[in-house]
Image (cartoon, rainbow, N blue to C red; front, side, top):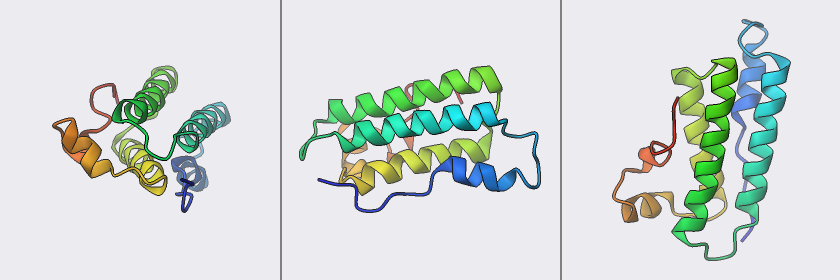
Length: 121
């Protein structure tokens, strides 16, 4: 199954904010964040037609822990960035055909708690 529509990346929004607040997102951070999102997109795209919950969750864990590392180095994830990242993770999975609501339900959590087990931000 292919990704149906590519969601807008949080880094696109962050770059838009640079005009108003250039100190928010250094170039090094944006490049590293895009690399993390590239890896996530590739890993999600590589999922088979009927991925197991464990396969999907492993991809979520990797992207979340990678952003934990970036946030530790740059201290940039506040409420808006957190919401944008979580929305993006959900949107990429949904576009790939993953029923995020059902996945979360099988794990005994709400849809918006999918990243909580690993998220430091």
